[in-house]
Image (cartoon, rainbow, N blue to C red):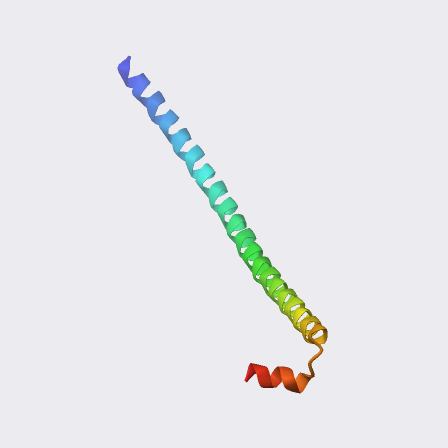
Length: 83
């Protein structure tokens, strides 16, 4: 009787091998999707960082203009001070 039992174990192992292989393929597909999502998010972050830097530059320019206007000095005097 032990011989029949070995055959059942082998069939069970074959089923498990097929099941694990199917799970691996599914996980590979999920990994591809996540990599594409990560790439998209990285591009979005770069764009957001660029927009934030441009906004900060504009705010800095506005602050400088406000400071120049509040100082009461002419543009030439300010440029001479900066040289």
